[in-house]
Image 1 (spheres, rainbow, N blue to C red):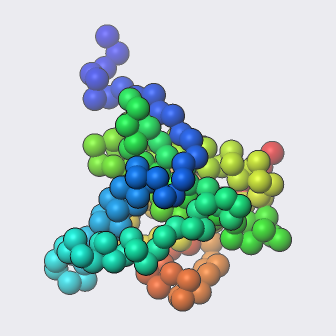
Image 2 (tube, rainbow, N blue to C red; image 1 turned 120 degrees about the vertical axis):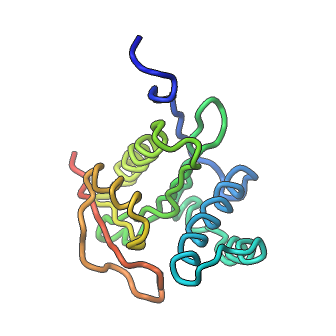
Length: 178
């Protein structure tokens, strides 16, 4: 036998989904909770309150991840939504798309959802005619930085302003060939 069930990558299906669907809203809430908790633990030695999370979700309706400006991709394993990734045009004139809101639920990490989401985002970006994908993230999200690096992203100069994302500390990009 070739490994235990925990070491086997489960089949993952990635498809676009409305940012307003209940599953997408739940994934975004989970994403906001995790990234906010990590920030508050690092800077204020506390976790986010449920009221703060609901405020963050309400402040960012993610309309930029809906057609025609973008797309929200949802990964499913065993029929259950386990992760998401947003892709939007950043600079259509320069052929640049941007990744946003990459998230995989903790129980599904290491089972193939993140690579499947990235591959699907690259395929969509190519369909759009994008020549490159960029993203921003925080220094403390080291797992995300490692994931992006494993999948061909490299550090690039800051491409947005602090007003666009006051928490951004790391900028990465990937050229899409062929």
